[in-house]
Length: 342
Image 1 (cartoon, one colour):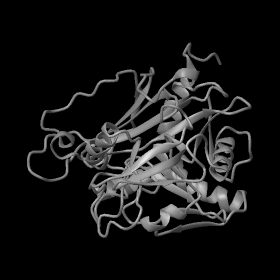
Image 2: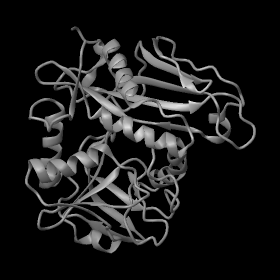
Image 3: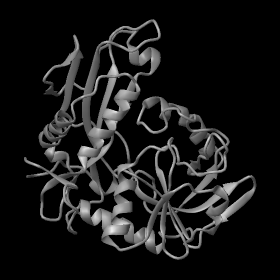
């Protein structure tokens, strides 16, 4: 199959519309069958539930061209399950998980020419999302919803690729205790926009958020989970009820323990122990793993031994192994790679 004429190697992380997307509607208590469409526009009432009360959630996953030329996605069943959890928390109807995966298959197959070629460094980012679409003026859930999937070819999430990032510890809270921090709701990301822009204005790449209750424990950034490596090589990720359960982070922990034979722990991470870690990275679908070189807090600095020039050795090994699995260079654990029939 001939790919689109795109400068794949120089793509940023932005929106480039492709020909096809999937749309399904929920009315009268049930979902319709949905369909592929070339119409990228959405028409809704000015009083739509999503516009008035932010009743929306979304997912993010990628399609890859493997070394042997197949088009695959990575663990889409976990995206379907996570979106189900988000919908339940926001009093939205769950889009059936099997139908979710079928819709992903349809969209990727219809846009197969947009899946970047193997070795280009680019991927096809897939964005499923759902929102309340009927008029809602009282504070209550909508009764009609639209589920959509579009996709767009993207390059690296952080400009500059694997250059280690500089973070600051935010004075803002990302999520409330017992709130919605553990679901992929649009409102969580809206809350993070001002803090991250403040970070950028002050010369930082991202924020580190601490737990909102005590402000002593590491949570996550606005769009990625943390991954630390101790000086004895143990991989550690923070545990919290208000952290989004990143599919990439969960996969990396399995790679660390089951594939690479490392010790791996998910536990509460106190901010005071961050200075003792050898490596730090941010992980998520968009970024995979981006190394962190320095964290600034109240005039002080935590500089990781892995430095500001390249990934630390353990994070590099995790990155190479996970991307190797995703791209078909390495054998994947059972059920991780979902092939798209084109």
